[in-house]
Image (cartoon, rainbow, N blue to C red; front, side):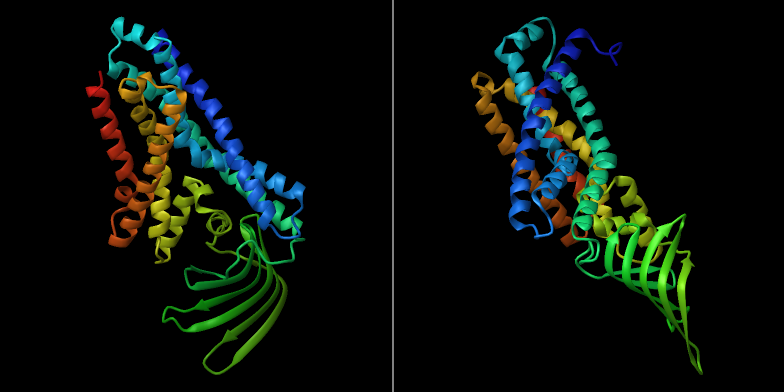
Length: 357
């Protein structure tokens, strides 16, 4: 990277990265503090202060992932604005650096921040969310209500699952498995006390199986039973974790599972595309912020640039949600619903940068 970038390019990248790190720490601290107070106020009696604090810490990567576009926007406004305030940006332009060249340098910083967002969304955020759910389950003794507050209905080929207590992605309890034939005639029902995913198969315990035939009904009891199914922990993870904290690879497997079983995967496909577009959104935010230091706000202070950045970030977030809702309402393709606001922002950023003086 250093061989490709010039010294001034690296200088701009470092300036943006440094201020983005400070902004990120500040926003995550504020976001986590609000979450801590909210969870402490609304949490059950089983969750003590230490449990809530642990959950808040584990949720920090997910919070940073959500805030990354705003972090990139504010970090760029402050980083490039600092260069402008110290007349370093003016010196660069006098030395032959065009606005587009400065924008290219900033875009490299946006690419690195986008890759950081990918790393958070694919590993740290889901892992932290899962660990936080385990802390909640352990604090409740593992015997109270499951992680999922509602019964979960799932289909896997000829089998239909009713899971009343989803404890984690690889464990559920109080479930029933209905098996149908090709004519959709019910052939058997299995009542399961508990199931755990071990070594590629589901280990069922406390099983009562009722088989139906044309002339009789047969009931069998199994203390333990190994059950091979296409229902994978990655599918259940979606119901345990918030959608924003499920990795893109996990969502791909979930979409493939739903489509293979003839189920509606539109919401999951939209969430998958929003995650795929997320790093590009970060880059668009960075590029959109650069022209502000050339325009009317270049004489303003850091407070003014922060205000502009927050307003742009809030407006973009609202447009992103509106686009997703309109796409779901009118049946737009998932790439269009997820990528339209980002594409519009990127085109607007390039136009403003090319026309900036």
